[in-house]
Length: 268
Image 1: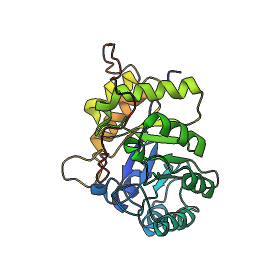
Image 2: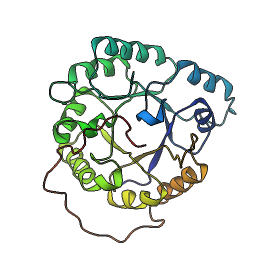
Image 3: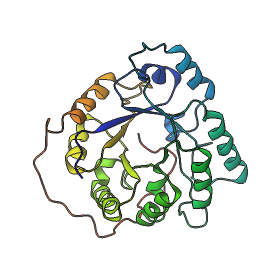
């Protein structure tokens, strides 16, 4: 089903960017820390301080905030102690977060750790959960899609297994088609180097996908570039604006097997 317009999720990696984004242009915020590691669990105090300090008029709604639950950078396989920490973090943020972002893989085969993921989804008590880009380094993305749906996640943040979403676009098309064919509830969020210069192609190719994810960071900046955010919102709010000519492409023969196992710095 084709969308009417697209929605923008903005990754914020510090208090200042979160504070500015709460009443900003984005449709949702992913709040995390450590951009150089691809995102880790932020400080609870930073979220609470931003919410308390941003006194919004009664007619202005706070942008929904989904909190990253990731105790460290590196691989997505966690020890018992790290998993216990993740449980504690979900409970700690439960009273203020609108949703959560996490993902776990089994160390023995790099497949989705369905047992632990289900438990965290249940711990979120009905708040929407996103399986993050651990999905892109899973053993097989088609199997991972089935597992993520089974676990009860609302979203999958993915680049289609490439470093940047625009380079994984063929596999993103495959994933979107699988979700429609299997009538799954989970939705894709397209992320990985999404910027104004490639959003048109992603938007015009992935016509059934609603959500697009960006940090809007430029160069060495640690705050989202307002020009990037505003331009992307214009592109997503106006489906015909700057449309690309239609072209045919077919997914590569290797299907949905993952190509990269690098997990340190997943690009936002």
